[in-house]
Image (cartoon, rainbow, N blue to C red; front, side):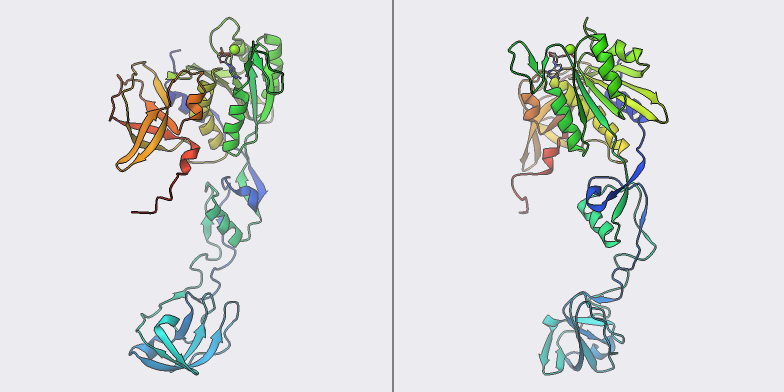
Amino acid sequence: MSDFSVMQAQASILEHVFTSQMELVPLHDALGRVLAEDVKANRNHPPYDVSAMDGYAVRFADVAQVPVELKVVDDIRAGQMPQLEVQQGQAARIMTGAPTPVGIDTVVRVEDTALDGDVVSILSQPKQGDNIRPLGENLKTGEVVLSKGTAITPGVLAILAMVKQKQVPVFAKPTVAILSTGDELEAIDDPIDDNKIPNANSHALYAQCKSLGIEATLLGIAQDNEEDLRAKLALGLEYDVLLASGGVSVGHHDFVRPTLDALGIIMHFWRVAMRPGHPLAFGTVKRKGEKNAAVFGLPGNPVASMVCFEQFVAPALRQMMGHKKLYRRTLNARLSHDLQAASGRTLFVRVTLSRETDGYVATSTGEQGSGVLMSMALADGFLVVPADSAGLSAGDRVTVQLLQDMDFQNDAGLEA
Ligand code: AMP
Ligand code: MG
């Protein structure tokens, strides 16, 4: 089988991973999740016509000519039901959010009036219906206000609170297990041994899952032998998604592939035409009474592992959580320097982005080796160089995928 392109690999993965079941979670836990059912309004909001301003509720016919004097017959506050009907030549003082009295059709702002005793002068001519928010303007009883598939932001959560949805139907989060493989690896709690390599991948992958709202389980480090690998991979297959890093190349001690075969996993591909991240395996396995489990064999090189997570694992996890937006946001930037390519593989160059007057400028974070973690630590995003590119020059327009810190910037950006 020839190498999959990045897009082929993404399509294959999304075809094989399921969307999770519905579960009910308390309102506050619903943030960042996705609605698994339509939500209907259980009330009208506002529940009656209300004033949008502090002012005077009037009959429009009375104020067709201004200035005009009206007798103030009532004073209505929010939360209080008006008792009087406003008659011809009368007005009611009214506060923002208070229900409008019978008889009136317009509210005049207090700034456009002058009060003398119980007589108010209307000084400027309103339009009929001004400053009244009609019953049901926000929510109408029985109407779908949020549809299945809506991602729950703070704004969406506010609507859920308005319709008193104390328990929210959302798609469940997939369970995820993380396993690192390699005899050379040293666990974070092990004493420092200068001959070993500290395990970065388990923790990087854990953090990447967490940034998607998923608390993954760390299964530790498997040694490069079939027995240990088999036992730990089998444990990982009890989760919806198993992320195993290292040991997926074709080296003499790369046992992940034969061990996954031996465990009955159907492998959909083994290699992707990309850099970093060429060795990347994806497979699924049937589980009794449950949906398929998915296994990602991620490259051992830390940068490659992280890039592959962003390109392949994150979209899969987001699909499982019911999200419709699966991919990192991309933007157009200008490259600040020449860049060699011509590899026949899609390149994911770690770059910083700076905001200039004419848009964003992308600059490589430096040494781009797939083991150079600093290139990831410094990155604002991945510059995507298509597989057929012959190289790029300073000033070229490029596509950059944003990493999550790009949601924020140093200055408020409010000046025109
Ligand atoms: P492998 O894919 O197992 O051949 O590993 C490729 C490179 O990545 C080797 O230099 C490994 O030492 C390194 N590596 C593998 N797993 C990890 C890990 N969990 N943390 C840091 N480096 C790793
Ligand atoms: Mg290895």
